[in-house]
Image (tube, rainbow, N blue to C red):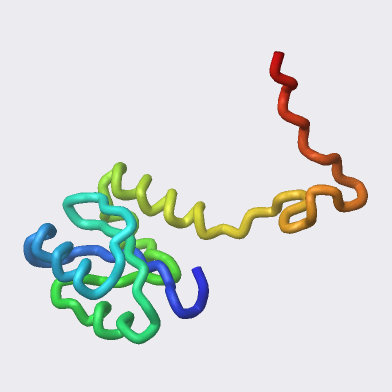
Length: 114
């Protein structure tokens, strides 16, 4: 995510999850949900503060505190683990290089039609 649009993990701590999702969708783009408590959202820089003040929700942009994580169900922990793993920078040989850069092989040609 860029600095203007950051992803956040939102936990609904109080109130109805469906009602909270409706309010979240009015303030940010909801990209994934894990009922009955979690959602991933992308909020624009200007609306992030307003969205994070949504009553009954807790917003986590960097990581989830260990005490909160330990209180999640196994399915919710898996959801959080996937969110964490996706945010780790990947190292890919040749990433962002042209396909014919020195030391790299060009892609295979498509098979000839017969």
